[in-house]
Length: 313
Image (tube, rainbow, N blue to C red):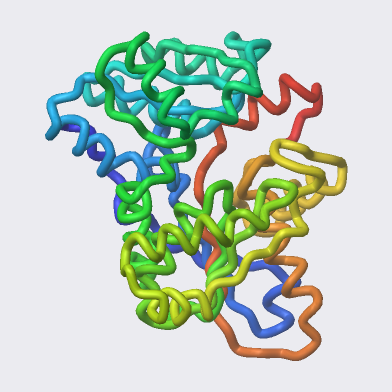
């Protein structure tokens, strides 16, 4: 399979943000948004080994799940197309607008879209539904929503390994905790890792994290030790998944003006907000290196602007 993007490892870029620098913090951005124009950020990390597994097992089709503005669906469609594989996207909501920029891109890359009701979508991990999908579409390599399987976790371990400065705190957006789990497993230097939930009610991410860690180690004591350096930030979701407001948009514009780096409104904008708010609450000056993992997702801006009628940048 010839589908490896040309830009890994990705750059670690030091940027200036006065709210951090006045507190002694040096801010670095891990530019995973530059991995590839179409398969950006942690999406490539989570898909890479899944693509290899599909080919090794003789499967020519990928099937996965996502919402109408899913970065994961767009990346899977692009990766499958580049690798010469077929793809099927099970889309949340029978009323999903399959002509929006995200799903339109998926169709351009040859992905077959299969919208299902939100009730049915909640059963996406059930044996009954997978059996039904195999009966309808034939054999396929199954990738869970967000690439949240063992292969996805393993692929994300490289993110932390590519950081070549001592990182005291590392921030990353979370939708399934797959990326956070991979980073936690590779956290040999003992950085404090902060997963910022992009969803309201993100407490389930802790269980997801524990499941991924236990699958890797089968050792409760080892998992407990790893978790001591992992923290979930649950209050920067701005109302829920893909919910935005004027405060978030204003912050994203300000962050871009200060650092020269754009974020997206679904994931990275919220993660950057949580990071900067943590710095603002810090009253003492400390000499620390903070790293922000830019997990890509910029394709979602066009769909969000179409949905809300608001120009973000």
